[in-house]
Amino acid sequence: MKAREFLKYFQDEQTKTLNLIREIVEIESPSRDIAGSRAVVEFLEKEVSKISSDFKVEKVFVENYGEHLIIRAFQLNEKPILVLGHTDTVHPRNTKEQNPTRIEGDKFYGCGIFDMKANVILVLEVLKAFTEFNIKPKRPITILLSCDEEIGSPTGRKLVEREAKRAEFCLVCEPSANGKVKTGRKGTGMFQLKTHGVPAHAGLEPEKGASAILEIACQIPKIHDLNDSENGTTANVCTISGGTTSNVIPEYAGCEIDVRFTSMREAERIENEIRNLKPFDNRIKIEIEGAINRPPMERTENVVKLYKKAKNLAAEFGYDLAETQVGGASDGNFVAALGVPVLDGLGVDGGGAHTLEEYIFVDDIPKRATLLALLLANE
Ligand SMILES: [Zn+2]
Image (tube, rainbow, N blue to C red; front, side, top):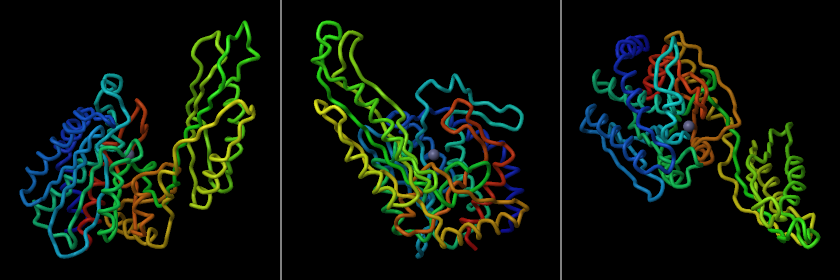
């Protein structure tokens, strides 16, 4: 089927697509919210069954996290294309009251609409187009929607890697960057620095105390010295806590460190520096937790090849597809580390990810659906 025919189809489908997007966004599903996760999965399972009874649906429930969903479409004797997405959002329950699901002008607002519930619907719309037009893609399609991506995929990672190992290539339906697909992503690490001091009465005998807060305050500039903008390495203390009450020398303080890098060598350097932090006050005990989480997604030759293919397909219907490299990581990082070609950021154009201003551009929906359909048809 030609690009312009797909585009026409998705334009005609637009009202139905918007309704489905509205429905899925309204089901709040913050990470670790079991009921929310199950409700989204149940909704998707029902929608998939309306498209075809031939698609295989597999649900993987993980205690304390939620439910992962795998959809296997078009059973063929070929290596599948893996499509990655997630059903969790960063928005706590009831946030939708602050960013109601609504269309204003050319923007469709909602919590988690851009990252990435609209894109989950897009994938289903493509499957629907294939069945309606009796299109047999060249390869089977495996869609994996995890429930814990926003918290670093502690349980989804295993499934992502398992499916990636079987796949020919991988399309990640994460948000685009101003419409650009992502051909490179930094790796990430999360560390916690904890300091344990000696408590004392702040008025009667402060000299007997060793302040955990003072210690952490001294450590923070050292952590910030790890930043190396030339190498693309960043290290930032993003939360801090400590102390009990105003008249006690604090016994405990802690902070969380966000680390990003473009190579594993840099990752190892930073990790080493953090693990070897020494206390300024020798009465204080330092404890380091956390680890490197996602390896970097490097812009390899295979990634560029896949991007060029997508760019050419987009050009068939007059859509200009640009690329970019970003600091944020996704499950695409795990796939790339296995040497499987990845194209990330295929989601609808929009903005405000992780904020109460989250939106997508309504007009971009049929275009992105067309691009996805062409990539998945893989002719
Ligand atoms: Zn996301």
